Image (cartoon, rainbow, N blue to C red):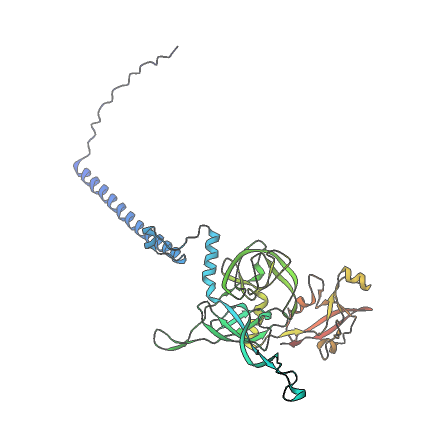
Length: 441
């Protein structure tokens, strides 16, 4: 093996410095150095204390939201499950914040009591029967109140206004009871049923209590926060809470918004209605969930659960909460829900309807009666304006009527008493001025 021998280097010897610092300056430097160390230590201690308190408060607040305490954190023991992901944390927070405001609606009716008895079929013909033969019969013996159904609602004001579906409280002969999450029961009054949407508003009375000062006050109800359904995006996570099957109170399901702008025809129990511009979600919604809230991860209500596609799997629908806000304000100010009313029955024209009826256009609203009902409502705004069966309404105040932009959708932008212009087709195009009227339940 061949190696390399490194040359030895001789370093020059350094001479010791003979520089001396006078004693006076040595004393000054010593105290200055001591002061710097003391000041740095003091500021370090204060900064550590302040930041430690800040983070302690932040952590304590976070733990409080999870139902934990700092003592449990120190001991490493906890009886409460700690969510493992940010989404899981958001869902549990939404449920915790809103469950107390979600209520069950119990439907009760006076039903006849039927009793069985035995009678002689020959008594009416022969007086005293020749044979002691009796047959069973049935007769009513009074009435009794029974629960016949149920649904879900949610409290939207501290004074006890409850929002739900119209089809939940459709029976005007029934009595409605609100069951809160803490087991209390309240008799409910139906304030309004929405004519155009599957929405209804109920009212329950507040309890009278004494506050901390001993004064008598009305106890406020827990309420939900209403969000802005115009900001919904497909794919966002949603939470549904409801009284499933009218038995399992405050059941929670989670899913996503899987579609927007859907048009459905909901039916059942004597209820039949076409609903436009609804939310489609895959959050599980079952019978009894109707009228419950659909919430975003901010804990805001963005929809009212209303229907499910029984032929699909986890295809459910909810009404946009913004469609209920107008009715809520009207009930507060007017005591009822009022809609602008034109007074026509119609079908929206598409290519198929155009072809089948040999129409000159493939858009608009064709005024036509159905099932023996007149196309024009008597004494309505449409009749006063001279509209007739067979007319096609092409535009409503400048807006073109299409399958995506229906007449029902456009008219909701206006109020009773508004004067609007209709462009219609009756042999040729013409314009008509109409003053909209009001219609309520």
